[in-house]
View 1: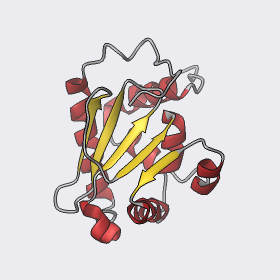
View 2: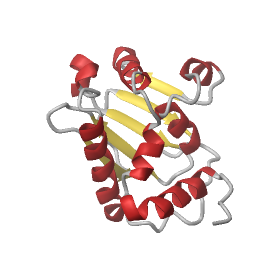
View 3: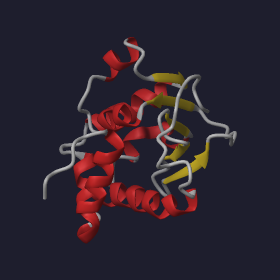
View 4: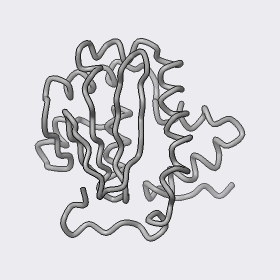
Length: 166
């Protein structure tokens, strides 16, 4: 999965992926509860497998958006997984894309994001995300309750945003 010339941040290669899985489970369950129809909006594409590759992280994600049992799992970049859609970009770009903070067509044509595979499924996912009324990323951070401040700082750390002085 690693793209040529890409260097991963030094602070993540030692992160055991099993520690990440409860966070990913929380994310997919939160999205399912907060926006119950998001996976239904995908129609037949809800049964597709989306490989999401943040090129600046040492793992990739597999999203199975089935409306009955959606899942999001992390895998080591050396793992080979069959998939229907491949989405690849830097983590911050993917985060902005999920939150509709940027034009996905511009990202694609500027080659900031790489999309391969079932284009109908990708368009269905993009449309479902675009239909969300508020910030998915901020809602996710807030969903961690007492841990929302550290979660926000961790996301800021990953995305290179400056830390708050608080």
